[in-house]
Amino acid sequence: MILLLDENMPAKVADALSALGTVTAHHVTRFLPRGATDLEIFEFLRRQEDWILVTQDRRITKRPQELAALRDARVGAFVFTGKADRSLEQSMQLVLDSLPQMRRHVAQATRPFVFGISDRRRFERLV
Image (cartoon, rainbow, N blue to C red):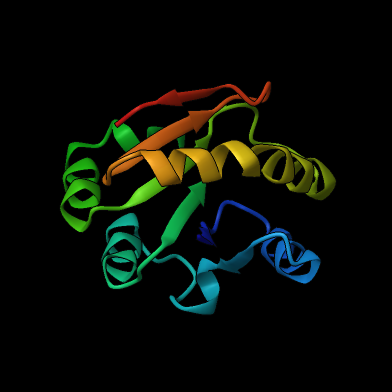
């Protein structure tokens, strides 16, 4: 499992996760220009095996065109649905705490999928 953190996640979280050796993680701006659309991100992920999108975009399942593109590209995604104004440390801890359950869902779920993750680390399948 390789994580691609969306632009709304701190790039330093991806760097720290990779440095810890817990999981391979990249920030989207490493591969796509800043401001890339969700459609561009989904198209990028279509070509990547074992990559999972991590985002704070709670509306990802509410936009029909984006939801159709996500499904078409067979993207697996996790959306942190709680407060968006987390510190770097809070964002890092949230991802670290969620990793074991994320791995289980990736192993068991058929793509496409989107799981919401609350601040209390509760997972809910959204797609």
